[in-house]
Amino acid sequence: MDQNMDQNQSAQPAKKAMSLNIISSSTKSSKHKGFGAGAINLNNVSPIIIDGGEAKIDIGAMHAKSKVERGIKFTTNREELESGRQVWVVWVAVDKQPEGGSYAGATACEMWIDEEHKKGWKILADHVNKLDYAIKRRIMLSELGPDDKAALKTLLVSHNEEWWNRSSDELKQALES
Image (cartoon, rainbow, N blue to C red; front, side, top):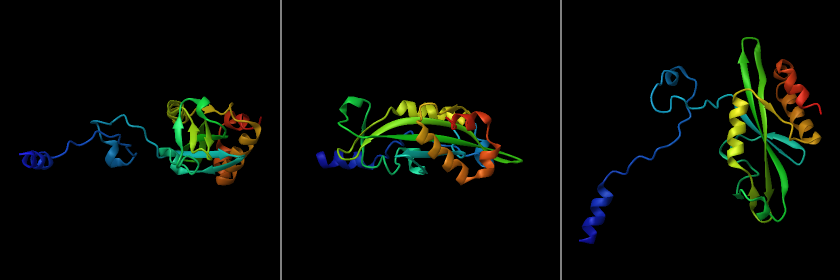
């Protein structure tokens, strides 16, 4: 009897799990009006990791799988970390206009990484909110130190100097101090 019950349960189709769909801006999906119609378009956002005064684009950070985050168990209680180093995720949004692109939004999120103990600290809600602010073209970089700002500016200019030149004065001033 138990075998029959197990067979019946396995024969039933599994319920499809609800998942988050990221809708691209393609013509096909822009006509989508149903479930997920208000989804966030992440096509023009890139995560930059600033670690030890060096800034690098790391697309893995989009899903909390950047090089520095892999293998780390995160907590929201900073006191659980015995040691570690400060690492920043900077969300950068790009505007594309007829005259060319520009860096339009940039926000910084803090995290701490203790590789020796494979532990880390971050507030995921802060990372999500800052991603949203970057998409909404806000500049929020005041928490970065001078070395981190210099590293970010160097990366942005070297990645695409024309985009840097077309970027807002607000962004340029935020990275001067």
